[in-house]
Image 1 (tube, rainbow, N blue to C red):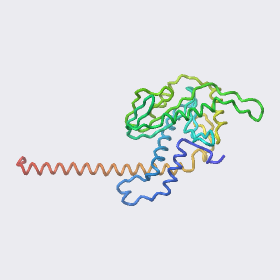
Image 2: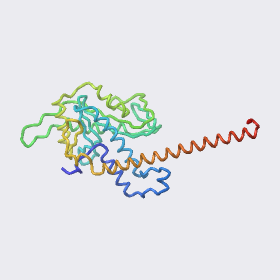
Image 3: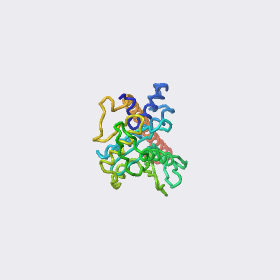
Length: 284
């Protein structure tokens, strides 16, 4: 099994971000001095997408051994891969992650607004869940042994839209079939689901997804099979981690400049106030 067949959350976004970054001009000395972000404009959507997906995946790992997930499952040759499928005692879920830094999100039954603009996130999540539902409801494939495989248990596939970085999320009239929630509420919400999949049924669901996927699945979970160490991370993960460190360093530099500006401005205002008081004769 080659590393290219393995996927972890955010792998595609990381790869595309780095591919665009390779074509970007390096930052000048002045850009480094003022703390300009190393991520170019064209790579920024892929960068924030990868960061958000990896942040959500880190939260999901806290669920424990009874929950497994598989990222970027390609179920056919035509449609895009499903971002993340989660299977556990509480059922089957598709997870769509959206990084909406400082945005105001309003969730209604017919639309989802981000800073007043209508976004198709609910529709996309619903379509992903429908594709997974089709796979699980289809007749099971006949293995080479000739013995029919057990059918997947009848279980709903619930689409989740997980919002990362938003300033405010308001659910006015949420859709009945799609759940929109913050990343910080994700694990708590999942733990509160009523158990609907026991061990054997859960294993059958995972096997059906693995059989339908065009590449081998990598399941994350404490008891899930773990590949060899050099295959558990895509080859560009270290490069992306280095880029994240550069982004944090640039943000720290900008913070220092802002602090310096505030101190200089405060000192200037203080000096100006004393000068005015002296002119008006208010000082001794």
